[in-house]
Image 1 (cartoon, rainbow, N blue to C red):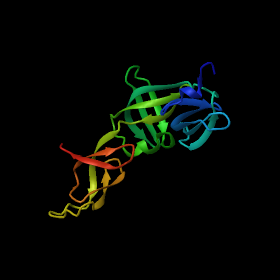
Image 2: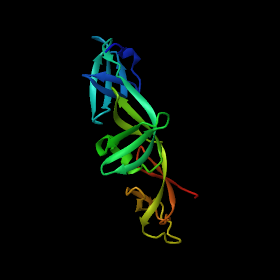
Image 3: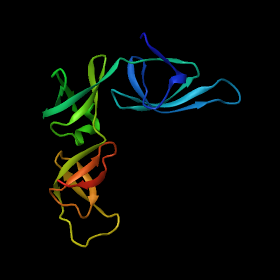
Image 4: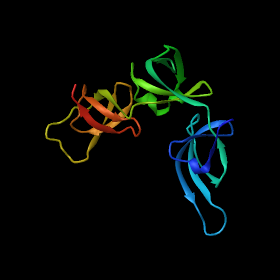
Length: 190
């Protein structure tokens, strides 16, 4: 652990290493109480298990800088519970399982360009674009004039994921889905 980070360098999205595991800072707050020494209250997410915890660091504490690397890769296909990705530059292939994919498995389709996160040379997770365009394969038909404000119905997407959509959406429509929240954003022409 040659590289280290001081608590004064903490910011959202910073990747740190604690107990030989990579973590990402989700939230942080520098606190300077009237009595005693200053500290930093953080919420951190484990990049391998996706577990989120709250941890307090004393001001001046030092944490490790993890050996993480992000590579742009293309999703090729799914075989069983393994997802096959190819490096766009070296054509090297990498496999991720369902657990490593997390929620991304609900939105990913063939030939999607993604970013794969590696820790100590081992693939541990995937980052998709913030929005994906997916086709509706199954939903109740839209009824003309049915415009109740805010009313939704379930729609099954080409990946098998079910999302709540407005009543005017029909089978075959192309929808833009937010991959961070899993919500319907808009209908896309095409």
